[in-house]
Every structure is written in C-alpha cells, then in structure tokens.
Image (tube, rainbow, N blue to C red; front, top):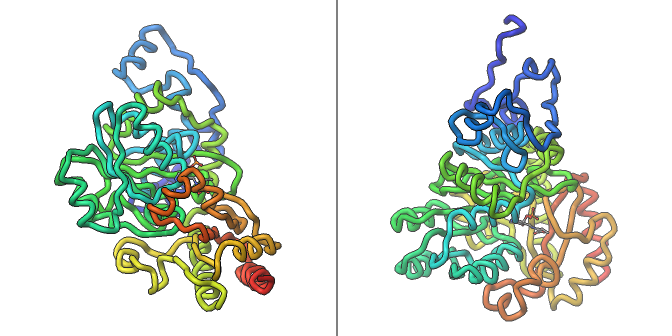
Length: 402
Ligand code: 4LM
C-alpha cells in the first residue's frame, strides 16, 4: 500500500474498530495519529461568495462553531455509526441533547407520551418545562402495552423513554413501543445512556432517535459533560439547525468532543467489564439477607427479563437495590462504604452509589415518586472498573455495619 492510499475503514468493521478509526485519516492532519482538536470559534472564507454559499447550505463547509466543528463532526460520525444511525449531533450535555430534540420536534398544542420512570431532570423538563409552552406530557407505564395503547388512542407526536430506566432499571420493549408510535405516525425517542450501543441499539428495534448523556459511559472517565443525538439525516439536521443553533445554543466544546472521542476508543472494553463486574456484584447482593429487593436486567428475577433477552447483550453496569427495613439502615450502609464513592452520575471508572429519592430523583416530589413507583429506600450503584474483589469487600464490610 502506498503512503497516500487511504486506510480501509468502513462501517462493516467491528464496534471497537470503528470507535477507534472511523472517519479519520492521519494523512489529512500531517500524520497525527490522534485527531486534532480544532479549537476555533469561527472559520475564514476564501471569498464573500464562498461564505454566502456555505450559509445558504449550497455547499458543505464550516461557518461558525455553535453549529459545527471538525472535532465535533468526527465524534458525531463515530457515535452515529456505533448506534447504526445515519447522522449524529453532539451537544454540551445529555439535557442539551434531550431539550434540543424537544424544542425541535414539538410545538404548542402537541402531546408527548413519556414513560413514568425518567431521570429526574428529564421528568422536570417534560412535566414542568414543556407545559409552559403548551405541550402536554402524559406519563404512562410503558412496560404495560395496554396502558400505552389506551394513551395512544388520542393524538400524540412522540413517545419518549429510557431503557434500562433511571433509577430502577425497568426495561421497555423498544420494538413493541416503536410499533405503536409508528402506527400513529409518531416518533420513538430512546435514551440509551445506561445500555450504550455496546449492549443495545434502539434504532435496530424501530426507534427513530437515540439520545445519550455522553457524560456517562461514552466519555467514561467522569471528567466531562456531553450529549449525543443519533437518527435519520434530515431529522438530525433539523435538531442541529433549530434545537441547537437558536433554541438552546448548547454546543459541545472542541476539547470536550476530543475527550469523548478518546473515551469511545475503550467503550466496548469498558462496558463489557462494567457489565461483567456488575453481574458478579448483583449475584453477591441477591444472596445477602439484608438486601430486600434487587433490580439487575440480567438476573432471571428481573420483571422484564424477557425484554432483556430480546434487546440487550448484557445487563450493563448499574444495579438498584433496597436494604431491608428502610432507608435509615440504607444510609448507615452507604455511609460505611470506604472504596465506593457516594456520588451521582454513572459510567465512570470509580464505583458510585447514590440515593435517588434525595438526589437524582428529588425533583419528582414525594407523591410523584410514590405514584410513579420510585421507592424512598432505593439505592442505585454504578459498578466501576476497580477489581471486583475490592468492590465486593467494600460492600461486605459496609453490610456488616448495619
Ligand atoms: C444521574 N443522569 O442519574 P447530563 N439521561 C439519563 C441520565 O441518567 C442523565 C441525563 C440524561 C445523572 C446525572 C447526575 C438517562 C443524567 C442527563 O447530566 O445532562 O449529561 O445527562 O446520576
């Protein structure tokens, strides 16, 4: 092969190969093995005419950093490929991704159906933010297809859900829900943050759009905030030109896009290890007398284990559980942990543990939590990449304190 022959890199290669190579040829950047960080806010045009053509979309070209940057573009291309979508859009956070979709696809008078278990701030956006603009969000138990069909009898624009859902890891059948949305001419939007494209690819099951908090597994190191949207080219373009450009302005910085690209290189390795360790931790917790309830998709006891087998490759890195006789003992247990950090977020190398009712899901309010089925005793753990024996030792010593 001559030095100028482009390397063979295509979308049929394996997930890690694409996460490492897709869309970048070092020959285009003076041989730099690692893609450059294009740290620029604006771009120089060769002529006024060229600038006008770029602005009018008559020719492809970069015009201003709020909507596009080459480092961001590479990240978008890679995540789109991993999810099996036509196009991607990277943004400043997961909430930026979700709100940019909503502000683009919904308008006053529209109705959206959401699952009743969502990340706290997504719930607040849907329950409090959207109604301010005369968009109604109805919260339905999407594990119950009859309830969904009843809700779908009235006009709606989109169905929105997480699977596994934050915080209790309920699973929703993506193909079944997408079929209901499709029959009504509505969109299906899936938050794939917990599973990542390593374990689940919602577009392959009929979803129209996938959103991510890339703050979590995609970045993978707890050192950034970022979000991604993946879907059809036209829809993603609309979200870029409306939701991002003038509705939210929630641009990812070139440096952050670079850090997510770096995280992607080890995504498959990391997610598989997170899942392997979490499976061992789930088995350990399930055998403890002090643990009264446990939710982990790969356990046969999971209420939607059949859905797990249908659409996920492994159970992921999160486990939700309850300590017998309530949260007071749960607090004692969490405070006794030495290696495991008490922190929100997930998908980091460090094992993190948190109390949804007082932290990530405090925005639900006590009655809403009760109505939506988020128990006050629930504890959520993101199993990290430490040696699993050390994670188990820490859990064991803390359980002895209660
Ligand atoms: C947490 N989660 O749960 P940004 N979608 C899902 C999420 O879990 C989150 C977001 C979107 C947590 C944050 C503190 C399923 C966030 C929002 O934080 O805006 O990147 O993502 O611990």
